[in-house]
Image (cartoon, rainbow, N blue to C red):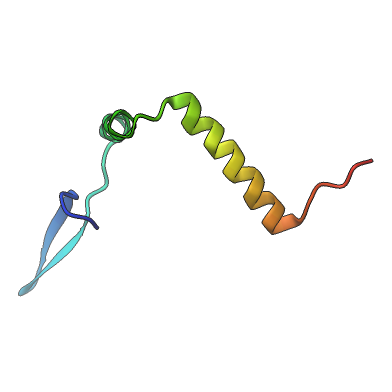
Length: 68
C-alpha cells in the first residue's frame, strides 16, 4: 500500500483487519487516466511499451525465437 491508497477496515473481535480496497473497474479506469495524464504517456505508448516488455519477458522465459 502507498500513501493515499484506499483501504477496507473490517472489525474482527478486538482487532481491525486493514486491507487494500478492491476498486471497481470504472474507478480503476479513472485512476489509470489520471496516472497517464500526470506522466504524459499516451495509451498508444503504454500499449507499445507493454508489447516490448512482453517480448523481453518471452525471451527471458523461453529464449529467442527460432527462425525456420
